[in-house]
Image 1 (cartoon, rainbow, N blue to C red):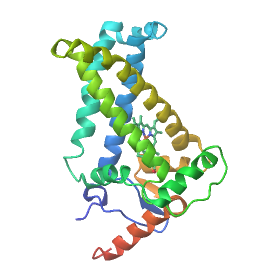
Image 2 (cartoon, rainbow, N blue to C red):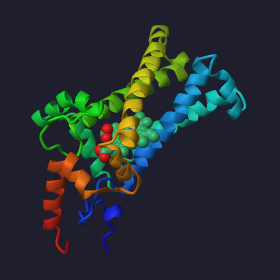
Image 3 (cartoon, rainbow, N blue to C red):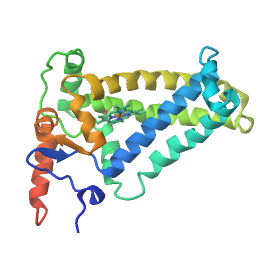
Image 4 (cartoon, rainbow, N blue to C red):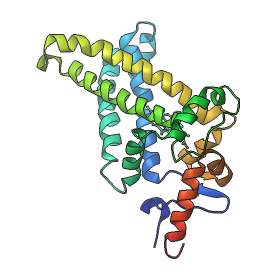
Length: 233
Ligand code: HEM
């Protein structure tokens, strides 16, 4: 029997539409929760002001160990999702993050107004709008630089001293940029009056059809037409 979640068929129902498959949601939440744990333990390692909080792990030495273990989860689990199960939506996301259309740039110009509660004027958006593509690029490049610099710091004796010296500011800068992006991203997903409905897509997989039409009309139309083409749907 066809399992829309497992098989990744984007299912459109009168009231709701499947936005994210189980695999997409698992990698998002594993990546997000490991990011927050890394941020928390990382701040405890970096700053004396956060050090007292490390008592919940049994001290900063344990926090250092947890930081390294979670770093492996951050990279390996999210990375593995590109290769296990139905991974095509992961590849589509990656491809879309590097492909900006005119409609995306129009969304990006209207984004500041939209972010601060106004109504920006932009054409129908695809699965990810221009702003989400910028967030995706920050996540991709931030994760890349934070991982590479982390590996250099972890195995510092294996690398030239000059490279190890560079790894520290690169790691910290990547952390600051990603944290700033995540704060804005959380505001949009949880609090922003127009876009907070999107959180349901990352929880149950489904968003209301009204939201899909209003925010991702080009994607919604494509998915609806694809569904018509699937026999028996
Ligand atoms: C509590 C924290 C978080 C919440 C509430 C949240 C919420 C969401 C939601 C609702 C979406 C889907 C948006 C849509 O329908 O288009 C999404 C997508 C995404 N999230 Fe998160 N997220 C969180 C943490 C994170 C973290 C920590 C990262 C990366 C380090 C991240 C990276 C992404 C990316 C790259 C996407 C796809 C592009 C986009 O929609 O911006 N998220 N998130």
